[in-house]
Amino acid sequence: MSLRNEAYNSIKEKMRRLIVMDKISIIIPCFNEEEALPIYYAEMKKVMDSMKKQTSFELLFVDDGSSDRTYEIMKDLHRKDGRCQYLSFSRNFGKEAAIYAGLQNASGDYAAIMDVDLQDPPSLLPDMYRILKEEPYDSVATRRSTRMGEPKIRSFLSKEFYNVINKISKTEIVSGARDYRLMNRKMIDAVLEMSEYNRFSKGIFGWVGFRTKWLEYENIERSAGETKWNVKKLFIYSLEGITGFSVVPLSIAAYMGVLFCGLSFLMIVAIVVRTLIWGDPVAGWPSMVCILFGVGGVQLLCTGILGQYLAKTYLEVKNRPVYLLKDSSKEEQRIMMMPLSQNLRRKSYGQG
Image 1 (spheres, rainbow, N blue to C red):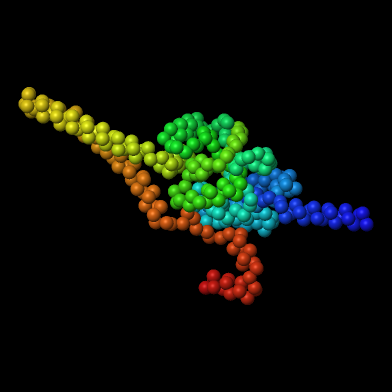
Image 2: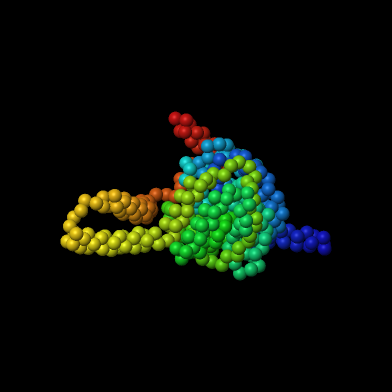
């Protein structure tokens, strides 16, 4: 009788754990990462197995229009391990769109964003989860304490970007911050409320607020493949951040306009006075040409700044979707569950 009671209590405890067990969704944006995907899954599987008594997992791979075998590998992982889900875009929409799509489709109580190249160490997840469970935080974020192994020019430009944006924006963006963070459902829903087309996640995470604890780690080299972020792409991304979370460039353009209007007025007065006193000599053409080029350059700069903000406004008001899906694991499961007759009919329509 006692053995039967013990077995009953054991089953009851297991059922209770299944019912109340938290779920963590891991969002992994991927673009041409066929080499890194198997390595990442093997490493992440160790972490998931070590935490299986605490929480369940969902690996949500987002294929950002890859041209290699990334999509096929995702499908293979899904068939091999039910915890692996995937989304595949119709084209390359960018990492920000992949993050947004992942958050929209995450079903977990918590969600983490990780790079597939293992520059975001999965080994930090147990500590991040423990902090959210035991301490009064809504998010645990990570930042790099060093940039060892990174080109010096890239490190310098990144450092200066954080210095500039924190001076001109009211939203604090921590220097060296990674997209790698674990968030609770409240913060996930808050981020999803910001459905803007021009996205800059580091700024969005700072703007929505919530209590965040920061963990530091040293820079880690990629596990495989090559980085997709060159200096040009990083520069464009930095402009997204500045124009998305600060209107200071517009203020600078306005101040420069006022300044040059004032200078022009003073120059007109000076020219009139000089002409009345000394006549109108022909000398001064080189200086005039220099002034015209200088003023013209400033005007073009200010026009460019205005153009950046107008372009973003134009894209926002068109209400285009942030991304479009070509395929997903949910769609695959839905097709598999169809009656055989419907499935065959669907295939025949596709061939026609």
